[in-house]
Length: 202
Image (tube, rainbow, N blue to C red):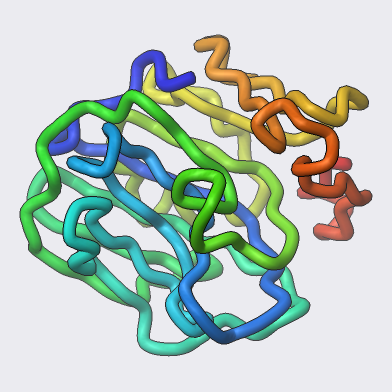
């Protein structure tokens, strides 16, 4: 679901924890889009955290270095209405000014653009979306495991469920996720999180 998700030109933030298995090829972490005409795709390009337009795939902002594999990293993408910002482990790693696509997202995807392409190989945890630009201090607090509560929080997936095919939104917006498009054979494997104990969820 995408209830409460912001208009493309409005401020918004995407954060999550990722543990990549490789540093090669294009991989999607989170895609918020309206068909293939508009939206943002946050992912890895040869291991480098990057956010780009869904339409025409022009990069909004990119980090300078690839993520170390088999290590947890906190990745945050922020659009403040004028600039794009990319943070890795709480440190700003890039900025950009390309104007976003201008439509409100009607679909959200985890680990793939559309269920068919640019699959993420690795682990992810604590996916969050806000309809506001989070400040550097708030990003640092998110890295430290702070309380994400905010009226602007429109998605929080902790993947704590025992239901293999559902991930329930903790934001109160009921933007629940269906894993593997509802097919057990397509669903990602749930594994116990080995984030630090004060951050981890199963």
